[in-house]
Length: 123
Image 1 (cartoon, rainbow, N blue to C red):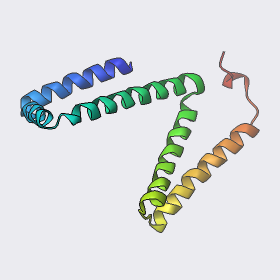
Image 2: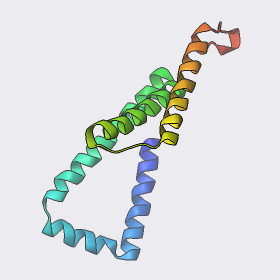
Image 3: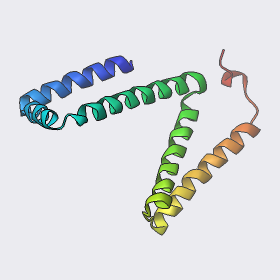
Image 4: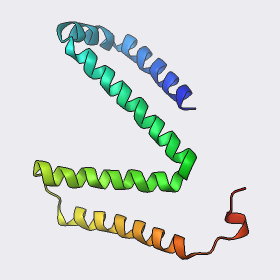
């Protein structure tokens, strides 16, 4: 499914680049800045690895665990931005971050305490 999505996305991107003329500008830029090719290759590999990770997370643990992991990752990205780069969050943003993690905590806490019903068990 992801292969098909990436294939169709690439076809649409190529078509739009040809129609708008952006492909010529990109090729000219790439000729003048050869190092961009290695950066694009790295981004492509990182994207493929990320998609593989997401697919394996859904396959092994389910979509709920994936959503918790991605939400946690996004929060730590924001926290790292605050700590390492000196960016600031407003009081409202800190409250929002707290509410998200409080909700995740409650979900994890009550999910473990709830007995599984027969229909909840995957066969």
